[in-house]
Length: 105
Image (cartoon, rainbow, N blue to C red; front, top):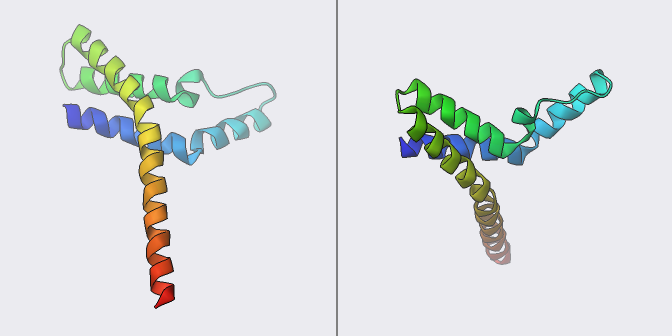
């Protein structure tokens, strides 16, 4: 169960990191004057919470326990974003260092 919840949080975080929801919201607001996507789509915390809760309820977990785990997972999703950026920046620096060393040869 915990691996599936972490995967939900990671996928939601990566979709938000890509900026897809911002582009979709911008498209909706251009097409329809003064309209935006519902909060559940443009909020990482909300989306992670609801997806986790739906997954847990469909997998047969208890209602109160599911609510608790969904809230925990939504908060973990918020924490994954800076960790993802740190790993991404570190890997980019490492690849840049390798390219520099190869070019010197």
